[in-house]
Length: 243
Ligand code: CA
Image (cartoon, rainbow, N blue to C red; front, side, top):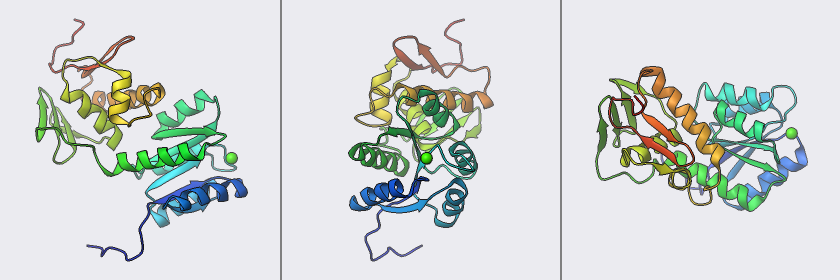
């Protein structure tokens, strides 16, 4: 085991931003809040520093020269589930959604609100470090679906599914309330935290990724159904509710 460090060990945040003055400003804010920034000024440097430093979180500007932010997400996601928060221009909804589809965990928009940025960084670190309070049962079991709370593992039809911590929390929350329609706001607050109730893109895209991973193993099952305008429901049986 690695001995604990004597110095205070703030989480290490890889800041990827090509504008040096802005990168320094973000680093200063992180440092002031007890986090340890590492700065990369382009995509290649970001990938190199990610491999060398193994940061706890990545704050990634999407508009980068050379290797762009999308490429950086793909390269890092191929190797790691480290939380990635993308930085996009205000109102660039398509960019936000694409960032989430590619595997980012959250987004912030420019011009940055630094208190909001710090809050989102902390929330993402919390989500990545804990799987949230466990339920009363060591495992949640339905036909063809096991959510193992002790190992934070999900098994579909006997095969393990590799979920990100956020996808796991989303499935687990649905599994704790089988056959009940949970509204979007409730899911956002339960899975992402207070202050995320309106971030419907986060829920929609994470739900899409989660469903795709479940369907890759059991294409004929509908584990999660959508009640349009209401929310989502875990279908605890093998039967398709619409048939
Ligand atoms: Ca930029």
